[in-house]
Figure (cartoon, rainbow, N blue to C red):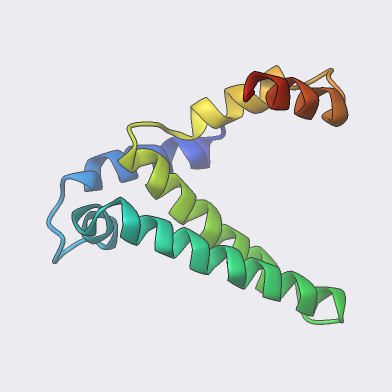
Length: 112
């Protein structure tokens, strides 16, 4: 895992049980999963809008910033569920060497 993700995972773990009045991450955990999911949804929408703007000539820094916000809130969600980025990276690594079409077909077959 990248050093940045390792550092962020450690910070998120430390702040999970922190004081909600002193930590944004602690406040999200304190409010519960639904609030965290709401933030993930908001950030997803902002990424979509920023990407459309960049495609129409806006500064790409906008979409990068919005993706960073989305990743952050997604990592908070994973932390809330007792997971971390390493688990997601391992899942992605397992998909190397498999076409996206075959990988999706395998997932769809497993969900039936």
